[in-house]
Length: 314
Image (cartoon, rainbow, N blue to C red; front, side, top):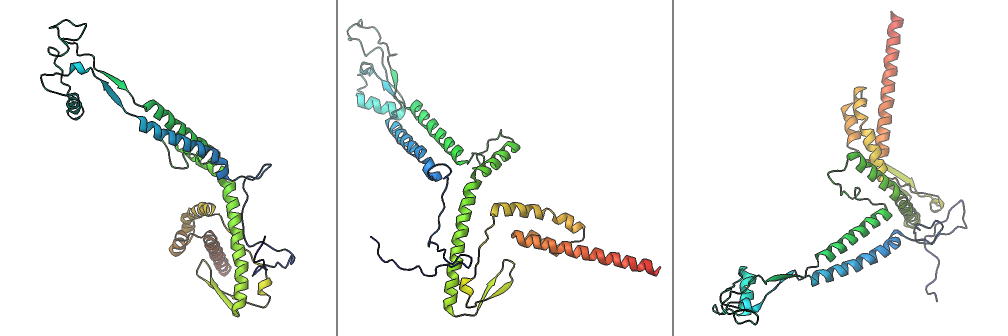
């Protein structure tokens, strides 16, 4: 049963295909190649269940761990000191002293001759620790974490867990290989974000059309202000959003910033170098370098024309 069915407000209409309608939500499907679509979380669920079971068993093993206990022959407790078993246990646990009088205790024990000192080497320890079991559970949990990292493509080096014996080149290659494995996931997610932004843009067109305004102003990344005319056909105009990869942009920005020193040696001003170094927009930096190159070419052309005029005068 369906309730409240009605036309979608601000339905985007494309000029290229007016009959094409879109649903008011966006999503993405991962890992649907020759199989049922499964997300990365769904793939790692069996490992998560096993990890939870091992963690529960680890808690039980820690709770059952009693350490090492003493096997004590109570006939070894000196009666002349008026020490009860409870007081003897108190001294043993708090002070760490075990009182034994081999010439007093154990004389009348069957099998021992009277007057012979008792043997006090009968105190033994019973190992009730669960250290081996606890270590095995922790080792299995570490193995599950390693397997989850292998499946997801997130290596220990990418998480920053680098040992002192690893070489820099090996760590860099591991990080790069991990980035290549996870790149398709980020690409699909970025495409989903682009569709969401495009839907918001098309919805905003309908909202601006209802305001009755004739002009729309906005500001570029470089601080410039632009104006847009809202015409009666504004709602039917096709607009799109282009999303850039921040990680690749940062890498390209670092490469472009390394070109500042050679540019200054070829005549670039200190102000132009500062504008490039302090900017984090790849397109703006690219445009700045293009303008610098254009000015340098103009200066070289003017210099060549001046030299040609001097030669003609001579």
